[in-house]
Length: 434
Image 1 (cartoon, rainbow, N blue to C red):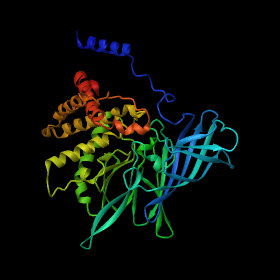
Image 2: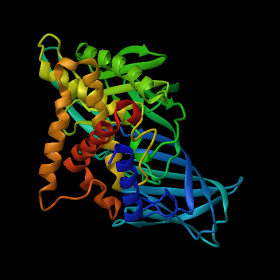
Image 3: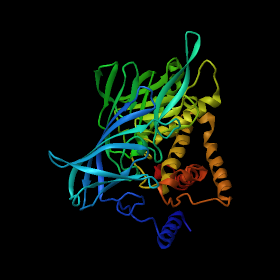
């Protein structure tokens, strides 16, 4: 049987077995109703002087498709002070009822349903800055000053999979994409970084400043990013895209290899995909501490600094390879996951498998002597090893609720996903598959 017949037979078998149904917004899994959809968020975040709590104001442009008795959205550990719905000059006051188990809040008017139409939902609230990487959290690190180590605090976000709801009330499920305009009020000497470039800085009384970022492209909530700290920056550009690597003070020299790698990787992806990187800038933030590897926030990727920074005074081929590989993985996510996002967590393998596969392809393209193509063999071995366990699951596995989303961030998703993609490419050939 020739390859064309084999492929036709395989496709017929898949059709008979029951293929993946076409995407349907209304039938996508999740806790939140699909009757009310967010279109745009305007967020204003004001951390307290102690960096333990924050004040927030969220203004959400929403579209109501049919009459509803209330609006349900996600919120965790947020104290609401007011919630108002605007369709004209006079607001409708909404009463809030929290469901801690579902991590949702229901906002209902005193009388009558909410009619179909376009509205603005304004919520004033306060929240807690966490000490662990969920939502907006503290990063504690030591800074050498005058021969002494001084403790410093940086603020960072980690939203994936379901922690945006700890920073702002919203539709914290990946199927809901909306644009964001973020404002942060911070101490004047500090630097703030978010998904988009800064559009305005306003000096405020009391040594504060208000930093506003440009309106973003539509994206899911888990990609929203905000970093605040005593940061230094290494700047460059490639193909008209502004590139920055942010570090804590005294470490920018170690960011030069990351910048060099990014200048090589980003143009390659622009050419390979035939779709240009979607934002005007790409920031990468080296976060002190070892609580995570990296996170592909659109336009503001965060890394454990040990995974991003490379000291050229102490050369290490292994470290070079690791830094290059993780940058390629996270930059690939700007297409796989960010530009195109799975509707629900059961298809996370499309994000992570493609990013892992593309990272290896890119490294092999520019550094063939590293022989990282052998990594695909390791993926297959790891995938088969995991498949042999009693706890094995399909690469696309049901995720009953967002509370179980973290369960699919495992070797099956990453390694088996990448191995499957590599096998498909090997079968069809690089150019056909591309």
